Length: 330
Image (cartoon, rainbow, N blue to C red):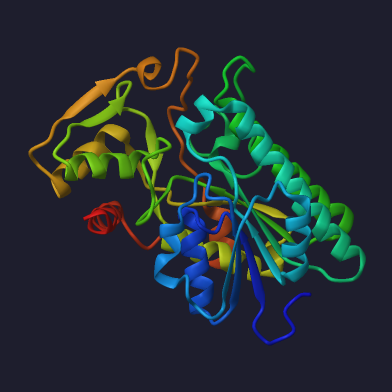
């Protein structure tokens, strides 16, 4: 049964992941109850160590591809944050089947259960985590939420990630339209911070880890790819405020930072701040992934919509972000 106390129960799928664990901590700090479901396929139990014994935390190790588990968990929730997904370019390039299945099927299960509760008169707010990958290779210098999605050929597996998350978005917005489900879709742009692993291709923890270990930083291609990095605390705060804001429901939001930096500049900043004795090595995409890999040269969000809706602005600059990642890894 849903929580009957004054403390709402927040279901976080993928709550042992990088963003999910920070979200759980944020909600516990607000005095709310948290129910985490995570199968630890990419999340890590160690991410929950500092608050696993919290009286308001309930953790179930299981998959959101299990319809009975989803029914039970969604049935207990007053708010749902659906973050469970395949993560990272390296994983997508290696396991495209798993990527598509894990991104689409659980979202459908969760929305179906929420739709059922809505039909019975209980509207449960829901956040669906999406990604900047849905823009594909749209050539615009800055991407806003109403822009076209431009994907490459189906023979290039990397686009399967963006396409599968776009399906999630279509589904979520359809549930808002047909069943008035209070859904918010958030497109994350390079979220970084403590507890993030470089194991799935995430560039900043990969760089910081190498620098701390005295190893050269490996930059793919020419390093002129443009990205924007936002600290996980800023992003998690925005996610919760969006869900708490009825005017945000039924809409899509870019969430991140809009300060662009090239990957080469990022590598140099990490060297300057973490270990001036290491150097930069370059690696081709075909050596890093495979010969079908295609990258996005520029990825910068327009944050006008989220700024207008919840007065959002990123508070931590790149140097502060690098320092926080380095100190957590030390």
